[in-house]
Length: 173
Image 1 (cartoon, rainbow, N blue to C red):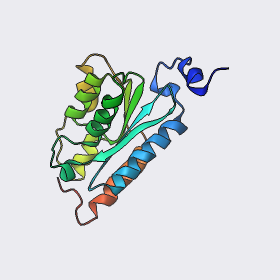
Image 2 (image 1 turned 135 degrees about the vertical axis):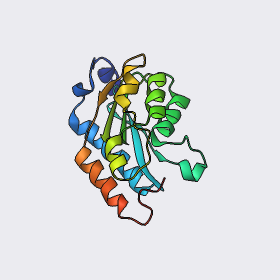
Image 3 (image 1 turned 45 degrees about the vertical axis):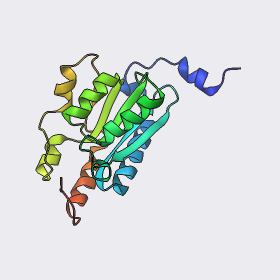
Image 4 (image 1 turned 90 degrees about the horizontal axis):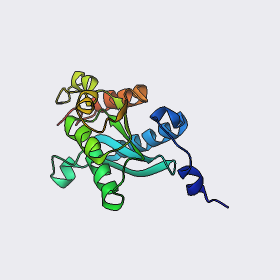
């Protein structure tokens, strides 16, 4: 008898759209939960396609770690890379569009896809300092090409960032 992971391993998934929205929504909500508790309101999750579950979930820790590179996406990719060198069966989900550094790291790590909520353009409108280079542009110039699913649960993530702006530390970079 096959165990669950054998059953999942035999299922070929070619696109992010092959994963149920319910599973990806759950992963994004986990990223939102860590973002809500973080000093910097950004969260990322790495969804394992084979096991159909969140493998890692991390917040942005740039302040705590005194590390300007400790974005949520970098933190989740680093955690995964330490235990699993093959990230090609993972989807990176982020509460906000990955910056050029994080999008590049996803290419280098060879994740299957990226899904994100709030766009860089919206973050800029809300007062966040950003490099205004969309993740899709970075991905288009990389190899391997990663599928990008923008605006995923954007209504929830945009609302989160709009509410964060009204907090005492909102928009601080």
